[in-house]
Length: 103
Image 1 (cartoon, rainbow, N blue to C red):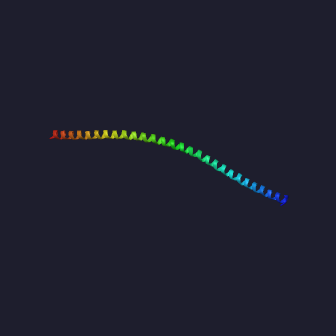
Image 2: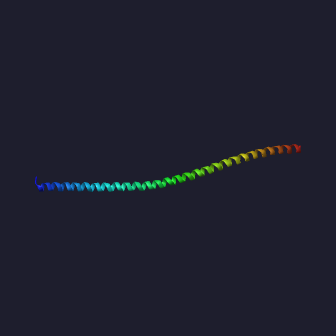
Image 3: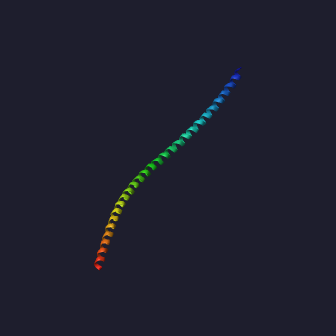
């Protein structure tokens, strides 16, 4: 094979190398794009995670407040129920005394 044949082979190898390089550069650009997209999603996720944690803290605080209010209301209701029973007993006794006095 002469120099012309070698030149053609080398030119073919150069074209093949250039095509592989072009494909490689395209692949690298695609990977870079995917990495950038992943970074954007990671930042968005971190923001959502912080929002979730903040909301969770607020909900836990509100739940504690409501629990305390419920306990206070329960105690108040028990006190009122006791007062109602006492008042009913006094009313019954008073009605009995009134009935005795009117006879």
